[in-house]
Image (cartoon, rainbow, N blue to C red; front, side, top):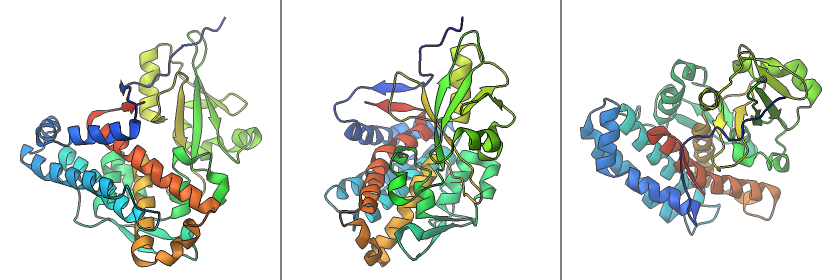
Length: 330
């Protein structure tokens, strides 16, 4: 008889708060003090003298977040992008002693419509430094690549139920359920919009190339681990290493994975948010007329507003994870 594990394998501190959004930003204030950043810098073997610079960046991020509170989609992206940029720069300075060259690390280009506007990833600057800090040598594959707003949105797990509203047919993320048993193979069940069981069976190794040496197809959108994991600690390690966690704490084990469609530019999770905000901020600043369809009562407006809401909620949690490990607010 197969006996299942009854836990989510999602490790980290959980704080029960009445307002998770406000709690996340309050934690940013806490972690952004000079004392805390000096501790983080010391643990990362970087100079503790840069703690004041990192703290200044985080203070700017907090004030920009507060300034964005009463704005609409016409101006909110501009404030939220610089909020996220300063938050990321503060984290990079604390962890690595610097945030890359003093540029954004992306170049904006207008498109025929809002979703077609793009960002070209530069060789240097904050954005490639962020990708490099998370992916190491694999970051080279993203440099000088161009990503559209549509592509960036397609990699946001929190928007996965809204993709069809703006014509995103090639989903860049998959929902993954862990089916783990004490005395049976561990299986990953994938849910990828637009990919059925037959497509998955034929193409899973190209869609999920990083899983090709770890798994084998086991039917019904499932992959079984080649090496079974028979204790919770090993499963936690596997999930934390190879999957994205759900930022909402759950009883059931829900995770996310990226999907490598042809010509897709894959990015770390927080980088997809930053790229999307960068494109929207440039539209807001230089070509606000392109935003007009996103401020009317349309599907596009709903998705863009949802993206901005998710960015406000998720980016602080992802930056906290860079600095301190996983934290959940519920």
